[in-house]
Amino acid sequence: MNRSEILSRLEDNSETWDVIIIGGGATGLGIAVDAATRGYKVALVEQADFGEGTSSKSTKLIHGGVRYLRSGEVSLVKESLRERGRLFQNAPNSVKALAFVVPAYRWYERLFYGAGLFLYDFLAGSLGIKKTAHLNAKEILEVLPNLNSEGLRGGTLYWDGQFDDTRLLIALARTAVANGAAVINHVKVTGLIKENEKVIGVNAVEQVSGNEISLKAKVVVNATGAFTDAIRKMNNEEAEEVITPSQGIHIVLEREFLDGDTGIMIPNTDDGRVLFAIPWHNRVLLGTTDTGDVPVSLHPKPLKEEIDYLLEHAGRYLTKAPTHKDIRASFAGLRPLVRPPDSKGKSTSKISRSHSIFVSDSGMLTIAGGKWTTYRQMAEDAVDRVAELGDFPNAPCSTYDLSLLDQSTAEDEAAADESLRQPLDPELPYTMADVAAAVRTEMAVTLEDVLHRRTRCAFLDESAASRCSGKVVTWMEKEIGGTVPEL
Image (tube, rainbow, N blue to C red):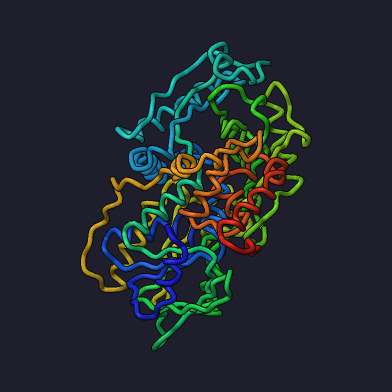
């Protein structure tokens, strides 16, 4: 992906687009892939970096959502399990199987959780991973030696998918571009273009240069996640707010807290939220919280009480209780939940993760809600409606078995230049080749783009990311022949 070439294409007003997508997270990029593979002319603009909001701050799981069975959302679980299976097929370099244990400390829990997880397997059908198993206490401790053994009666082992969210985002962007779409980051929409009271385009500003861009299309799609209502009000100041943001945070610990290759699913928490402790890039990722009544922000911060909550619950299940001193990194993201009619006073953990599509009187399509695992189905539903709105030629969805371009070019960069094999830091699993790939082929513009999203340095170890930032900036400035932007 060459950012300069795509920017030039967008600045050239001679091109007419079928679809303009606002938002470069999982939903927006998924729509770009779907629409482009149907043969539509697609432009996508993202105000910050791809996935800089919610999509880079997930629990790194491709899953059906075990807890949704408890609330009776069987159709959502079936949809998620189906899409999980498709992602294993379509992005084999990005998604892998991960075993989880649900420990049982009361006599009835093995039966209760086991029954739910066997149903989970059944709903997955032929797209399942491996079979769920009942394990006794000894067998549980063999796969999870760090689990608190006091009162342990056994547990249930089941399988789900794990991924690196921003690496899959780049795969989506690369796939969209390969199919003719023009997708770009750091281009912020500042207004909507209307004609005869219909939305026919966007005005935007390229954040590095400050240059203004105007794009016109038959259909404009609002896929901005937590910022959905801001774009809706840009279209109509009286537009009803449809998003209830919920903050989820994660903390990253040393690997010693969770030996082995198995995660823990903690189903009993003080607020009813399911927690996960999973191995990730030779660290332990612990999350997530569900905090409502939070402001919409691109960079939300973990609250002290949220961190305390995660540490306290981890301490109940692990042989060694983590403390604040053990945290290597932390991050927060906002879930863009669709506000149900009866949501007043309702905990955000009880709000459905299903997606919704709205079409304004001016013809702008908004898609909101959903979750990472179901991005492809969300995109299909959105583009089906886009085709109706734009009166486009009938073109069926082809993403069911579309292979995504999910291989990094870092190895190619290292093979071409041995100096790029230099590690960024002894505590990080990245080299300068990853930086080179990010800047040259993955549209990384800022230092944060590189350290937070093309690599996961800042998500794995904040101190190590800080230590290597100087050498990364020096290399980037030499590569681009100027100062690295701070956006």
